[in-house]
View (spheres, rainbow, N blue to C red):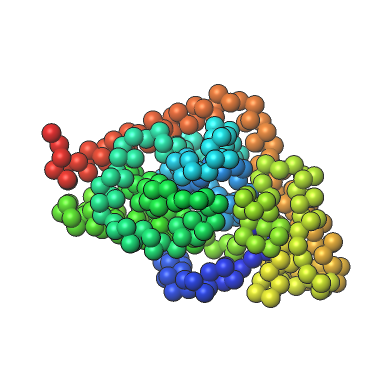
Length: 366
Ligand code: TRP
């Protein structure tokens, strides 16, 4: 999401307006419940360790995680290292990516005493859930998943691996191993969440566990509009259009200076008709905590160069404390390893308990 201007409508309205708006309505209701009683929620969120987290991640979901944590919601933060196995470039630098992700989490304010940060490959009982879960989904169902189709189309790989094809069922194990009932996600993850809900429901039905062994988790959609990358398409590391949280101030300014705009000198906030300019305005607005229309009005006829200066300053100022903290934490690799070790231990205990329940429900305790 660079060029940093995009509208959710532009990306999603044609494909899934109904499902999305239902999820949005539900998300708003869940927000009320969270404020009333944060203790009734257990959140599972996660990222693939594909490289440094960027501003699209930050305003899309990371910021929201810290908010939920600080409201007192119990949280599991998963590093989906099995989901990057088929990406050779990433797999060659896995340790670096995983540790970088932990650093990013700590720098933005994830508190390892309150939230459990772990890697799913380190949790055997989580992975064992995949087998009974796979028995509850059809091959056709997996093949219809629009996000998987999209990833297959963009995967630069000659053959689709079984792992890639089945990863939404694995993701259900990621969520259900800790019986999470709330999953903050971007809209592209909604099909996976729908499958997770189906698996939970089918497991409960099939193995007759009364009130239900598994909850059917809700999606929590962020209300922040999508940021575009510097080229005007979805911000993503693999597209080379992202501004990393850990980038230097100079690099940030350079990337923003190179961001795509349009020929109209007068700056407006109009995400539908002027996605690139509007994404830049939005980025400044998010960093400054101001209304994007006001920011656009302030710049008015001063043009794209002024807009870009405003954005660079706003981003660099916003990220300065996060970057400083990251730099400081990066000097203590032992701490990063310890956060992971302790998170893995906590997640393992939870997964073991769930697997024990699952085996009892399936009548396979010998
Ligand atoms: N597929 C998610 C992504 O690409 C990462 C992920 C893996 C995840 N397991 C999860 C997200 C479980 C939410 C819940 O970003």
